[in-house]
Amino acid sequence: MTSVHPAVSFPSAYLQEPAHLMARSQHGLHIVVRSSIASANYTILAQSRDELSVPENSPSVSMWPYLLSSAQTRRLNEISIYSARGSSGEQTRLLYMNAGALRMWSEMRMPATIIGESHRPPQGASLCFGMPFSE
Image 1 (cartoon, rainbow, N blue to C red):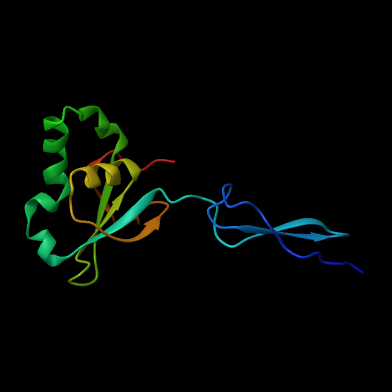
Image 2 (cartoon, rainbow, N blue to C red; image 1 turned 90 degrees about the horizontal axis):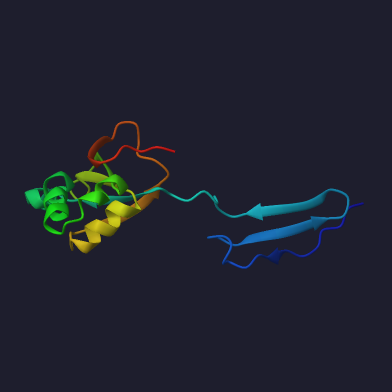
């Protein structure tokens, strides 16, 4: 007969989502994690049809001039942005930005509607600025 002890929570400083320990006397220690520990590499931004009507809202148009004018061209190696077609007027284009690209987009005070995260861009997405995804 095995007994199950009450769940014990890990401190959330170690995991993004809390995990619970469940100890079973004959089966060793079992850890139940409520979500994936693997972090997302890309943040997904949606751009509307209206936002796309302004050329500067395209990373391929606005980021290089920003890097040049701010003397930060070395940051190009830290940026990876992919683009994919959206499915509605409010999400006409989806941008998949890594942390460096998202930080710069924010510095530039560009519009951003964050709709999710992804480990990698989808296969149908095209690199539109920066360096390609790699693991």
